[in-house]
Amino acid sequence: MSDAPLHPSKGEEPKRRGTGTTQRVWQLAWPAIATNLLHSIVGMVDIKVVGSLGASAVAAVTTGHRVFFILQGVMMAVTAGTTALVARSWGAGDRGEAERVTRTSLWMCMAFAGVLTLPGFFFADEMAGLFKGLDPETMALAASFIRTISLFNVAFAINIVLGTALRAAGDTRTPLLIAMATNLVNVFLLYGLVFGQFGLPELGVRGAAMANGMAFAFGAVLTLGLWLARVLVIRWGPIGGDFDRSRIRQILHIGYPSGLEQFVFQTGLMTFLMIVARYGEAPYAAYSIGVNILSFSFLVGFGFSIASSTLVGQNLGANDPDAAERSGWRAMFLSIGVMVVFGAVIIAVAEPFARFLIDDDEVVRLAVIFIWLLGSVQALMGIEFALSGALRGAGDTRFPLWIVFAGFFLGRIPLALVLAWLGWSVEWVFAALLADYVIKAIGLVLRFRNGRWKHAF
Image (cartoon, rainbow, N blue to C red; front, top):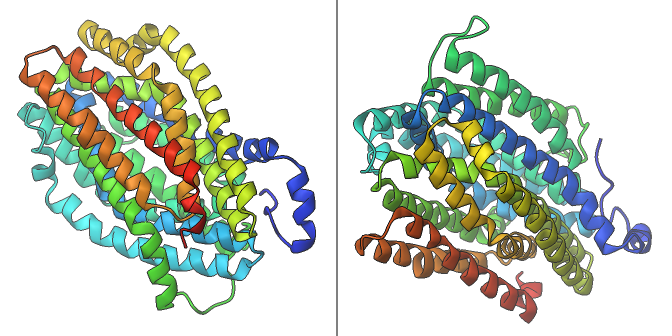
């Protein structure tokens, strides 16, 4: 049910290395890619189902998801530390420490998730109100979505922590199987709760949030059951040490820049969407549809990010920094190649895909332009995914934070504001994101080349 660890014992180390860096990257990447593609397909189904309710419903769900992911930034901080520490422990052959890190991370993330439920539930209207360009009906729908999905934060935390630990130990197949089951539940509930089918109530946009949340809950119960039954490669392990202060500090020390990175990313993205929203609901909905279509390519990049993070961390744990560097570069070149191919195919079918998701000529026109623009920088995005993952696997989580900040707030946002102030069309505002990816790609290549990440901790 799981891949073998990279360095389960010192005696197996030469054999594992002999399999080749490219092969190992693919072994880790393809299940992660498949998992991400499943999520992307379900995201498209989500947009298709909600899109039948109109552009306002699509805009409301987009807003709800943006706010939801801002609230998850703290959880991302914990799991960045989980990835680096579990991968290093596994690479060093210390299964017990990998299991202790996993349990500590789980308790921390569940606690943070419980706290984050409060603002999402009680201040949903204020959060939706940040998007001034949306009409009152859309804001009310977005607030309902935010309030509902916030109730499932703890379930989301369980899924993300245990999935992260499994991938850091080299098992990317089990999260794929769990995702398959979870997404089937999500699609069934989505159709049933939005339209009132299968004996379920008709809840519209709120039903989409409920379906997402209940799918999180199903996945959490399934993963916990397998974990407690000692079926997973990362097991419950010996009791004790879960709340060791030095381990908690280490997880937070590595992870908090990733939490800030997620906050900066989501804040920057929300700021960009606020600029787009001032042009009306059609451009806003077009952005959402364009991102969902191109997510087939983006999530391929996430797969290589996971592979590079795991291999870099495990090789550093095994005291082989040269192999760690080779893994990072190889993951980058593979990521570029696959993302460019996916991006080209998506660009070629952009219009029929967009029209499949929503029957609105202006939204489709703008979505196609957005897809052409973002599709043109797939190579740069491939660099970002692979090398930022490699740095996080090494425990160097501060540089990705600064490069994301630079991309948004020294590139995309200022350029978008200037273009909007000059009165240029929203198509030019969309094009401002090109500056973001150029800045990030150049910065990450220079950082990985200098090798400082090899001594991050």
